[in-house]
Image (cartoon, rainbow, N blue to C red; front, top):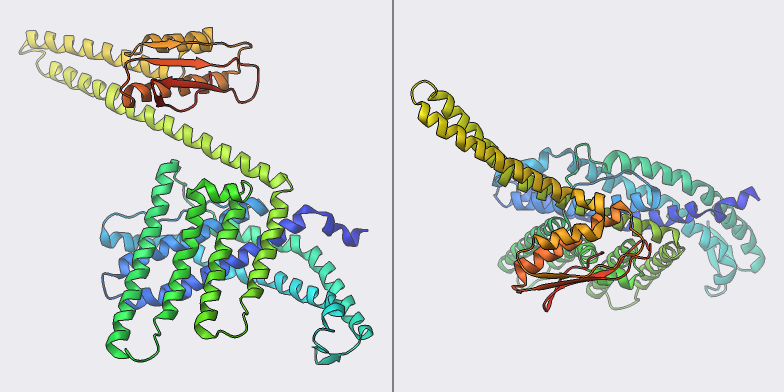
Length: 501
């Protein structure tokens, strides 16, 4: 039946998971903005406003990055979100935050996205309540629904039908609402300018620095409020506990996200899905916040159990989507792509460094020698002869360095004679004696050969540079045509990166 077709489509459940995750992140973002901006404005006349702005920018950027990741993974949105604003100098960094259009767009998305997610989730909650009314009305003795007392099973049937109708209607509306959210994420979370590609270590440093700034700002604010409380009403209610809880949520959610991104353990425990691990970590922080509120206000009815059940249900639905296989394969491909981009970026930086330190410096010296020769052409022919001789030697040395660099990009022997000959030539140029054993059956593809060559080259370079050994031994297993060849390169007792050869 076409009426029930949305229940058989995976896009419906992906949209539902997206709205649940968006509601959690949106509420966290709303709390961040409500707590962050008043504190920043209060300190606007002091130098403390600059670290407050930087910390607020970092926290907003991290939450927006999480929202962009969810929208990209579940809805296919095109969203590339920066988490920092560029600026040099103490005051210029604060001004750069205020001038950054991405910062304001991300805040608009944090404010608009979660009310959109709240609508279908509210309808879903009401529909499930009506569908389950024939069961739970007995426990309550009687139920008051729309001002009507429901005292019998027969009286629950119209509300049961209403719940089924709402559930079916919602199933048909989830995908269009998800399309609206995808457009909103693309419009507000996609960066207008070029996105800087950073290595894994640089990205990690940015995340840690952002979390450190946020934590220091939150700690300073709480300490200031505690001092104010101690000077004004030391015997009264300890009211700084409430901003402390709000700021702990502001720091805890980005901290949980960074913990998942930095450590492989949470993702491994979540079945290899970082998105699911992030949802579980953020849910744990939110539940801890609610339990703290319950403990401060009352020790009676433990109402945080209901949000905990809702968060657990959302995590279960997300896990079902992840373990269905398709989404997990997408995450694996995205991780492989990110690793390939990082390798490419590292190689481009190496080439840039070699050009700057080697051939470029020699070519500059060559130009200076020719310029001096031109100046002394009529007055001192002997000096001109020496300068031209130096220029010729410099040109020859620059040519040699450019040839070596070109070989480093892709050695010609690798394409002409294969991996075994290329590794032999690599070992022959090593200043440390290296014993090489290569056993290759069918020749791998050019991409695999290039990756294997540079892996062995980097492993030998690391062994020679860091292991302080007098000899190296390189060995490999037979290549059988698998997509991931395996081998091992060792330097004495020093462990080196795995090499495919």
